[in-house]
Image (cartoon, rainbow, N blue to C red; front, side):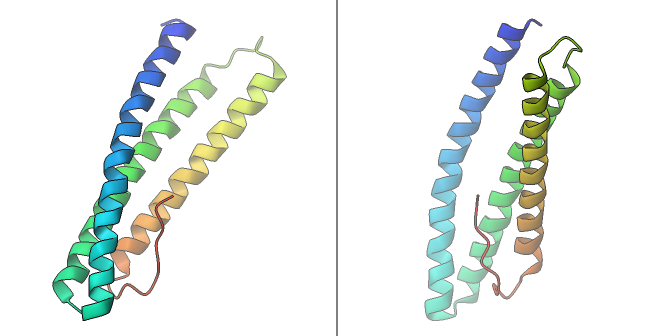
Amino acid sequence: MNDVSRRLKQINNENIVWIIYFFIIGLCLYANYYEKKFFCTNDIKAKNKYRNLTIFIFIVAVLIYFYFFIDNYKDFKELKPTDSLKKKNLSELSLLGTVLILISGLIFLYISIVDTDLDIEVAFS
């Protein structure tokens, strides 16, 4: 696959991710409703709905982050010795960035699963 067709495929996949993000934003607002309801009324059902929604949101986010990690890793592995130093450096930085985002997503997912008392505020980022 040549560079242009690979990049066009990446852009199409990114468009799908943006659509998924719109749904995640809606789910985040919905989850916040249940979080607020729990803190105002101590409703255990609202707490459980909030936790389940939050866990689902972070599972989807981690899957998206993993997709971008794999995509960046492929780009990094396809670097040629003739590529410019700038391209090599930026590819390395991009890969590092996706690794860090993936790690943060996994940490937030872990927190949302383990924090049954909702003591820690997790933020979708």
